[in-house]
Length: 351
Image (cartoon, rainbow, N blue to C red; front, side, top):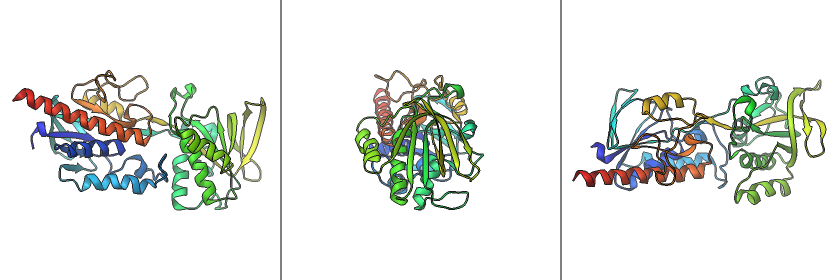
């Protein structure tokens, strides 16, 4: 297998899986390197429930993507492995893996994803202090199990509050970006909670609602009108506990300009998307740049789509900033096609 026939794909989430499948379909070899012992990225590792906007269970949708690459003879897979060193240049890279293997590749695609914001960094909102304060990923796991219960005592919650922008749009903690998908995921999650537990009232506390594009009607209005989700425009100050054991969400209703203190049984943090915690290491290993927030820096976008700051190395998905699964898959296809086109171009020049 020559370098000119091979593309190295780092990361096996939706973007990386899409890139590898595209490369293989175009007659080239793809080598996937995934640091975890399973494929599928955040939707599988974090136990997502139903995906936005398809409404299909993550284990089924992403499972099909995993099966596609595992059954393709043009794709080889290294699990529980990382790239530790990259030598060479576009058209002739040699990557050394943590398992001792070496991969020769004409191009490299990074689908290295993101890290969920750690709510411990927002302590005033109760995560890590109270059992019944959860993250959206934890609530999705509860939805996937088909049962909504308070972790503290197992009771069915009368009220669930979802707090938006936890780890997003917050300069005080160095998160100056919108995480793009949290509003839509939260409105979808509110509907899922009501489907499983019709007696539970769901409240969404927001600064702004950003269910972009066609998601406005399918999620925001549907959640509000059909599932009776209660939207409260507010600034949340803190989450504490009342003497009866319920959680108290304290803040200001910014529409009527008055303080609010509302008892809840479960509080959910709609956590944002941080840069991959390993990005400084990834940047050093692959010789690429990071943008000011710590995501992977992109090349000029209009004529060098999916490019990074190093020729021959491409990037796709949430590695460059918060993104949704459908866009990540499309970027994976784009990066795969771009890498293969460049390989064919290099072969033409060589001949």
